[in-house]
Each structure stands twice: as structure tokens, then as C-alpha cells.
Image (cartoon, rainbow over all chains, first blue to last red; front, side, top):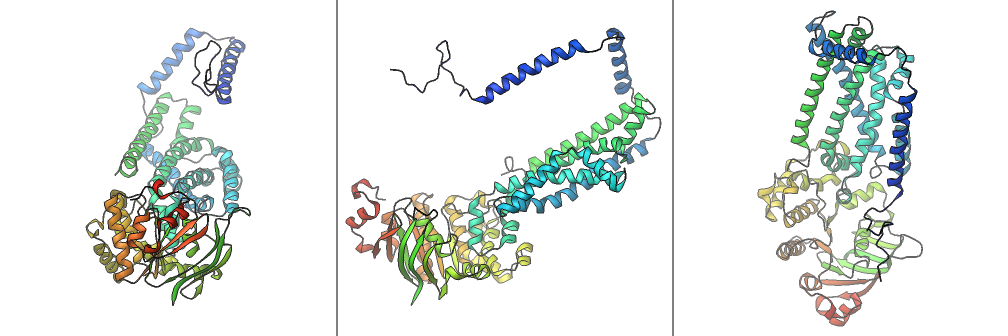
Length: 280
Length: 254
């Protein structure tokens, strides 16, 4: 007699998937998206479109943008300064956010806080996270006016929400035994945080902060354009929508790309130096 | 004069299941007492009631003339400074150095600020090195704890307990994760703590023979009740059967 716990397909072959709902949902989502894509292409308005010239023009634009980058409305010094402004926006939002998030996440971690405080902080933070950064910036612009203040406040708000979640999850990973041992010595809550929780999670916190800094740099570029926060993002906005200067757009894109690469390289090095899996 | 006196101790997490039932015993200063019993008998819970890492529901614990059950938060912190604790999994902070981990034992004496800034007096540091030397791990003082072997880590754990200047050390299966030779080193150290330093030791053990070799007295626990209490020579085969609820021949004797 065959064991009943072996699941077989209709043709008698043994099934190795558990056959849960997730698989089905994923499959149906993919099918639906494919159908929607095809339908959308059928209903596009193709009037006045010459596919041949569209493609060559686009290629030409891209060529001008990326192969002949040049500055016309400002010089190298100005460009560097504006990149610095954007970096500054991201930096301020990240650092202030990280400090506030640290204390909030102590309240949000279930093993460090009481159930109700932790729940309240979590719900609060989830609501903040649900609203996109740009919206927060525009909300703060009502009080602070469009500009760097509103941009930093908005980015700060979202950074806090993001980091509280990341930090508190890192705190919850701390071995329960460490808490027990420190409590048994008569240590109080702050002692445990400083000597048990922080040393065990510091590298995680650092790498989260760095990740957020990279995100904030990208957001700061967008904020320069959308909220008048200044920096390289504003120049990008001017070059593309006011001067239609493709060469300058190309230059600015390269500048942003280089900064992004530097940040990425820097954070990778930091991680390999301080991250637990790679260090001893 | 007893250091620790337990009267009618009872503990339950839910209303229908009692983890501990009517536990009574007394321990004199400087005694080495082992608690043996099968897994789930309530050994760990009982040990943690002594410094209220676990809150108990019934009965009374008198430690050093203090009623443990009635202490407020501040008094409880003070009580815990005089009770050291050693764990099966050592429970050190792995990313910190040995000496830092040992000095954690002084937190009970520190204000919040002193603790956060990591202010330790020179005497405390001297004492930490003295203890490390006594347990033979002074050469590892500046190594991170996760670089040490299990036996070495447990010795750091013992140092952390001793630097509290405790009157009582609670050991929760201190050798359960160690190999036989490390186990012997740890048990010898614990024994010398009670004989040389006069510190009382209350030790949970899984190994009956180890308990017999080292203890002044053995307490046998089964299903939350004390079923045996006496010296190691009084622990007969029959008594062991009663504690573990099986025949001795079915037990691995170390």
C-alpha cells in the first residue's frame, strides 16, 4: 500500500511543491499582468507616430546626452558646489533621522519596551512609511515653504520611519541570554542597552544608516527638482525642462552617477570591515 | 544561620499547571548544593526564583535576611548584586572583549551614567584581572569573547559572577554544553569558590555522578516537587530512580 503522505500529480509523478496558495497567486498575477500589457499596447494612440524617426531621434538624443556631455549654464566649481548641497541635504536628513530613530526604536523593540509602547510606536511609524517622501516634503512645505527646510523635514520624517523598523528588528535579534545575564548582575535598562544591545547590533545599525544615506541622496536629487530644495537636482530640472540642454543633462547625470558609485564603494568597504559575516 | 531559606515556594504560568509545588529548603553560607532532576522538572525555574528573574506566586524566599518577594525594583537590583549567575550558554556579549564582559558584573553598583560611560575604578579593573588570572584565562583578556572556546567562555562567565562579590552563585547547568575535560575544570573552579572564598553555590546539574562528587548536599526535583534532599552518600540507587522516574540501568552514568 502506498503511503498517503506522498502527493502526486494527475499523471502520477511525485509532486515536490507543497502546492500552497502562494504559488497559485503568483501564477495568476503573472498571467493577469501579461494580458494587461498586451491589451494596453493594442489600445495605445499611435496617430502621428513614425516609429522609424522616433527611434533614431531617441538614439540621437541619448547620444548627445551621454557621449557629448558639457556644461553651459554653470561651471565646474558651481557643479561641485551643487552636488555638495545635495549631499548635505541627504546627510542632514540621515544623521538627524538616525539619532531620533535610535531612541524611538528602543521603544519599538518588543524585547526592550513594554507591549503597548512598542505597538503605538510601530503603528505610528508604519503610517509615516506608508506616505511617500515627496508627499511629506510637500506637507511640510505648507509650514516651511518650498525649499531645503521642507525637503529635509520630509526626508527626515521618512528616514526615521524606515530606520526605526530596521533598528528595532536588529535589536530584537539580540540573544535573550545577554539580557538575562546582565539583569542578573543588577544592571538597569540603560546599562543593558549600552553594553549588551549596542555592541551586538552596532554594525547592523551602521549599515542600515548607510543604506538610508544612499536612498536619501537619490531622494535629495528629486527633491531639488520637485520641492525647490536646490542642489544638483534643481540644475537637472532647469537643464531639462527650461533650457532643453541635453549636454548639460548628460553631465549632471554623470555627476550623480559618480557620487552614487563612490557612496556604494564606501559602504561596501565599511561593511566588509565591520559586518559580522565577513569579520572574525 | 542559613543564607537562603525557601518556604512553600510555588510557581505556575497558567492556572492549571504548577511548575513548582511547595518547595522548602535551607542553605547555609559556603555550602555547595546541587539540584538534579529530569528535564522539565522545574530546576531552571526554581533557580531563577531565587533572584526573581522569574516571579513566583506562592511562598517566601529569605536571602540574607531579605524577603526576596517583597522587594521593590531598586532593592531587587541591590539584591541581585549579591547573587551571581552562571548560565549553560555563558550569555556573554560576544562582540566585546573578555575584560569588558567581566566588568559587566559591576553594573549593579553603578548609576545609569557611570554604566553608560563605562566608568570603572582601578580597583575594579585590578580585581577583574586578578579573577581572570585565578581562573587561568588572563592571557585572553583583550580577545573578543566569540574567539574563545566554550570552556574558556564559561570561565569568563564565572569571573563575571565573582566580580559582583556575591554571597551566592546560581549556576544553571554550567557544564551541559561542555566536553568532559572542560567540565571538570569548571566544576573544580566552582568547588573552590565555595571552599576557598566561602561563596555559596547552588548548581543545576544533569549528571548524577558529578553532583555526587562535588556537592555537600543534593536536592532531587521531579515534577516540581522535592523528592530527595540529603548528602551525596545518602543518594541511593532507589532515590535516583525516584528522582528520574526510571530504573538506574536506563540512565547513562557519567
